[in-house]
Image 1 (cartoon, rainbow, N blue to C red):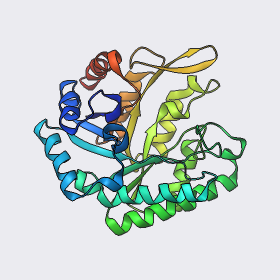
Image 2 (tube, rainbow, N blue to C red; image 1 turned 90 degrees about the vertical axis):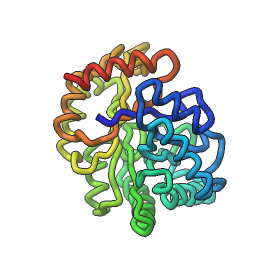
Image 3 (cartoon, one colour; image 1 turned 120 degrees about the vertical axis):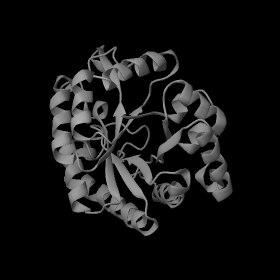
Image 4 (spheres, rainbow, N blue to C red; image 1 turned 45 degrees about the horizontal axis):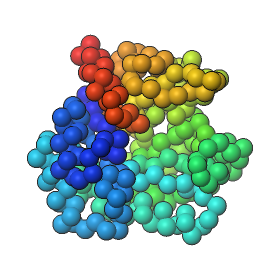
Length: 275
């Protein structure tokens, strides 16, 4: 299985150190968010600099699984929104130089920052608005032979697997695929149904899934709190079996797992890989 980690969840801040740390912890793949890992905006990268990063990664046997260029597609400031659309397109333009076609984002919220729940997020008009932003991104991706990855979340505009399925049906393109972050779809009311939610996502989207984000959680003070993998309520034996059965070529990216939680989480998943 193709196991990776989000680069800025590690301590390293240079390409060589990042690749070495990832490999030493058992991660041959990285979700790379350039400004968070290296403190440098996408506009500051050219072909030579990207080639240098890729060389450093290759020395440690590490590859970029996807670029993260997450932004709020429905931010209330149209100028800020357009700046981020342009930045996302620049990621698409350069993605293959990093060794991946994939650039990912979520679908945002009418709550500008942080992207938490807003009553408008789950309205039909919200879906129609974000769909047109995604359509524009996918059209650009087609022109540069890259791929937009869309990630849903309960608090955002694409808030359930059924709506993500509608999106990929409304924009039929091989340059549009999806990230499944099961934790993102959960809340205090539905978290016990996480197996059913995963099964629905696999039923509807298995042919479009390129990435899974791996998280675990406990319930604390009426809220879901993320914890190390294997230390919470997610049924990972079931989850891993389903992924191996239905989407064995997907990237499995550890997200939000840091510090002392990384090594035991990796060991836990390694045990399930071998079952």
